[in-house]
Image (cartoon, rainbow, N blue to C red; front, side, top):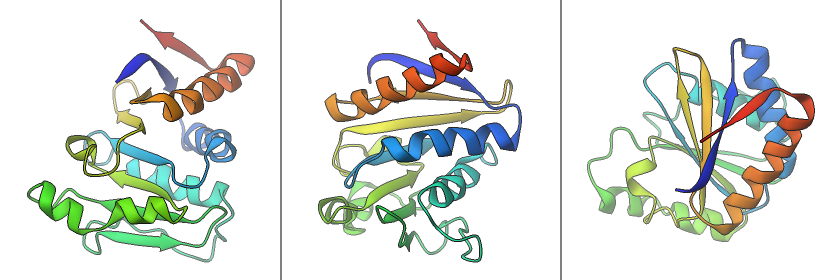
Length: 166
């Protein structure tokens, strides 16, 4: 990871939705988000909120892709939501072809993707959710994601809803 992380406290579901609504407009086609944290910490809830923030109608379900591996949503820009928890190695992850999803302009959200950053194309915004306290720690791995993180930090600093971790 490069630079500091941005820590955003998420005491409520509304706070998580707010994070998604704030982040959504900052994302561009081809961006990569790695979602980490323990089971039940909010990865899929956040992915659902982000899809809604990008225009997905509420009538369309956004389930965990644990068993389907990849779900695609026609948002603006389009989203591919993947879960690589059950995959055993980098070859299986590479076989999903998520790098081509990015190349065609899809935002790619990947739960449990931290060990496979290289196979996923690098330059990711990494969002790690935790329970106690309930929060998201965001960090960037390269230049493009660093710019997104900085913009997000400015949005939250203006609203006084976060702090920078040292």
